Amino acid sequence: MLEKINETTEFLKGKGILNPDAGIILGTGLGGLTSKIRVLTELDYKDIPNFPVSTVEGHEGKLIYGEFGKKRIVAMKGRFHFYEGYGTDRIALPVRVLKYLGIKCLFLSNAAGGLNPDFQIGDIMIITDHINLLPNPLIGPNDDRIGERFPDMGEAYDKYLIKRALLVAEENNIKVHKGTYLGTTGPTFETPAEYKYFRIIGADAVGMSTTPEVIVARHLNLPCFAVSIITDLGVEGKIAYTTHKSVLEEAVKTEEKMTTIMTELISSL
Image (cartoon, rainbow, N blue to C red; front, side, top):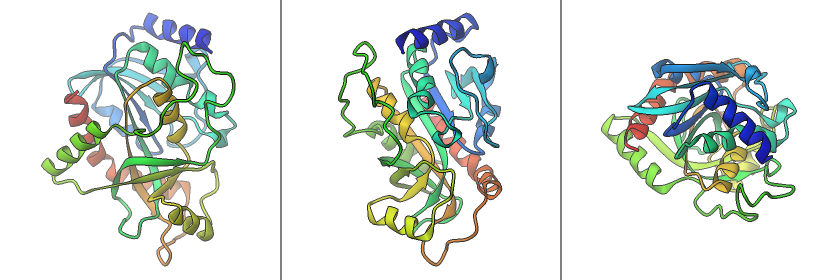
């Protein structure tokens, strides 16, 4: 694995991606944030050695390097999912590459179904913890040069970054919630019974990504900050017919607020 990481890292350095301060992984319908980046380098995933390719609408599949929030960042405009046929270890390979490029923090976003009865469509949830129901990306042989065999997940989401994000939201009059995200395989949206079960076991929102990337980031000792945009509701009495198109539409509506939080948070690094 380390050989692939180094091969991809050296390729990207050769394209001018040098000393980034942070990495951003953008979820379904949330790629518009990249319009705020002063682009220095842009590459299609298909042209990057060892990178998977995004196959889902709303995930454009581009790696963008540039200036954002007064910092140098690498942004993934589109991510990879287990339901596309990729193993979770391959899904998370780009996280390892970002770390080896030099990022100090990883920022993630996703579109999610709200399980907490206090949530409404369009709300932003800062993720404080997660429940992972996807195969763990660290299963298999461990390379101690990359990270230890049994990484602690007691603080999967960085408390300092969460505290700072809450201040940014308050300063900009942006309503946010805090909560636990549950990652599941997809690609089906949940049944009413599944929504109920996920809520019972402690989830506030559910989606089909993020947890493998965060697990790998913590294996690398990389601080993480993540937000969910609530694009549909899995609350009894509020469950409506959900499509990928409707999720995309709702994500776009709230993206500007998420961008404000991310910009100021990254600027403060």
